[in-house]
Length: 193
Image (cartoon, rainbow, N blue to C red; front, side, top):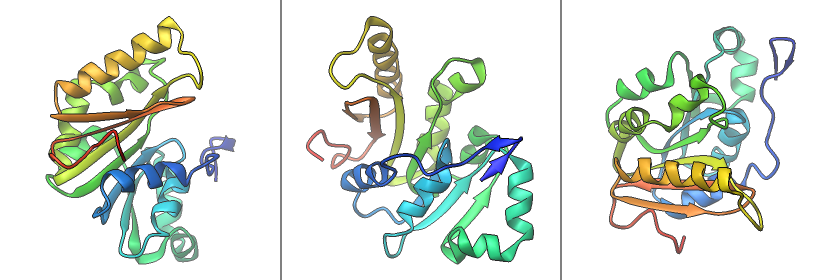
């Protein structure tokens, strides 16, 4: 998908891995919200699971306008099982208490104040409020396949601590990117999943 004179959405390499890990942590999930980088690719992968509905949150209002105008595009992007939402993600989540079984963020690295908003206690509180009982938040941070340098380790530790200040349960899957899972259910997240 093109926007702003360049590629705005693409299916990330291994896009199936993220939904597979999230659904392994919460196999009963049926109401999913995806937001951020690669959200269309993630949504397409979640929609391969029967019974799953997806809200694709997109900050680009021009893109949303195009999708809402063109029925063929909307049908190609998931049909009736996928809907689109826009605006500020924190406000969006805060206005939907208990709405989602899974919230999956394709959050960018926190290299700017705008990107850092996804990794704050306030954001995690909004996400927690939007999760149904047993719901799970999934997000990413830079990692290292074999070795993590000091900066990446400190970044990951800060995310881990901040998640722990909001959620009672956390798990992390290491790799080039660290996948964090957080929730309040005794059953998930699990480091075994």
